[in-house]
Length: 115
Image (cartoon, rainbow, N blue to C red; front, side, top):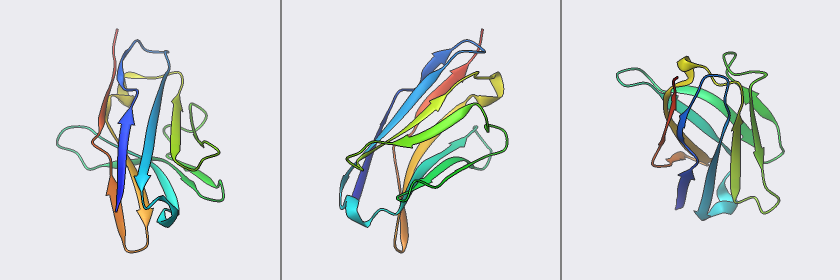
């Protein structure tokens, strides 16, 4: 099993920045990719960013050039640096981890971009 704990959400003005963190514990050596989805109430979850264990990254077109996903050297924690935030980035952000055969989810953190 893998457990994910997220932190770093909050309220920010348009143009501001936030950094999300996702700390993994448990069977972390089974993880081959991690990232974030986001969800606006009533809508489907949208992939925001992903990073593989080799460091390969992928982003939604809507966040390219503004968001950066990274990992620490211990392989336990992933970060999502979000710059130049826009009101349309407002959502609940869910960290996820891919292991063979399944996906694990974090508890979600609210990001609100508003003046």
